[in-house]
Image (tube, rainbow over all chains, first blue to last red; front, side, top):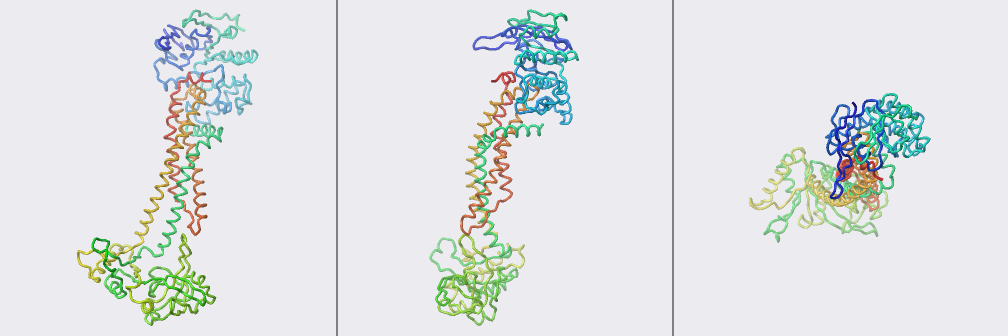
Length: 231
Length: 404
């Protein structure tokens, strides 16, 4: 198993009260899986995503990522895990505005300490893999929404992570470019990448091979998607 | 990683050119103030020092003085006599030569032109002792001195003051009531802060004594050349001993004369320039402190503006130290660039001010001031950049990514 989450709980203090954003969630995700996490706002899906993405640590429970217990790590150790194991694709792209597509894709490699020449080679290859080989020196504001999100995908891929975590990746795209992007993710999964997709849109979730639904901090649904249903 | 941080910092500063410039203005002004003051003071220090440099490290001046001690206030100064200088030369082997000089002020005339100047009565050896030579014509000889001839060697300024026509050599001019023949003109030394260094007339010592009276009336000094500059301290001790003996100073009484050498002049000038530099440094310290607070303020703004960027960097794997270093480098580059601008501005202002004041020596910027300008600026950047950089480094990635 790539991800082993057991009895994960996250409690936020809210004034004098406590909010149980996540209430005893257990979940296993295998290598090469394509899974969608769904749920309405307040269901705890963002909290679960933050925990799986190693952006946060749980109040209790364990999280084993790639055979390593990561639920008790400190800030810097989590940063190293994110750098090595996880590629993020965000709803709002989250590219650096003043930096070229190539510079944005290079970023994880810079923090991984990869030497410059190798970095450029890898970043170029990643951009070519998302069909942006001819847009490398363009800054985000010179690219369309779909192209920006593809830059973000290239950035997520460049360091060969164990897991790609896509948080509402089509949320800021029109339906046509959204479909193109999902096609790209489908393709990445076919080539062996593990993808965790967070979405509230049913038709986007149908791209995954397994759907997990959350409600009030608990998993209420966990079933595979029949291949026939996939778009 | 460091070079990436440099590139990031330059890009961020360049994106906000105007703001960066305004932010660093405090540092610019602080550094400029010090560089300007230091360059002016050092220029002055240099010029004065150069003046005495010709005298060399083997030069000592002996002057008569009333002892600076209680009970001596109403005593008469015991003057320096020429005969005593000969005694000193005989009894202190380290002395190469002594040139006694008596001086005072006289009215001088050439036809209808009338003026005032300093008259120095001295000996033929004077030129070699103080390394200051005649430019044209000749200096006087022992024959002129012994014969009490009425010959004079004039400073270049005298030609101008008395409107002496060419050929100057051989002309007769009036010193007081007596007519003197001009036999030489000294090389010109120019001017220093309004003081003309060519405004004097040399006449033979005994001529001066016969016309103006004995040493009691005029001030006398002795210029002394030591033949081995490395034995300066020994020579001074020996001179003091010989002088006390010759002048019969009682064992418990203080010296009734004093010695002056180049190192004392240099050390006095050094003290003065040290004070001036200290005052400038004080002003700069305040400017740099205020400037530093400005830097801190703008860096805090920058951290807030770039919260999302910090979130993205952390999400893809930046550790606290990566972010800390990035903002620290940015603050330091900001202040070092300010320091560089300040140095340029200070050099310009220093040179400008020195040029505007009449007869002021040109400004001189010492290397240590430039090095210090840069290091202090960098220091300000680090000190005032730490807090904003720490704020950035500690941001929570989730909050930072969500920041609008």
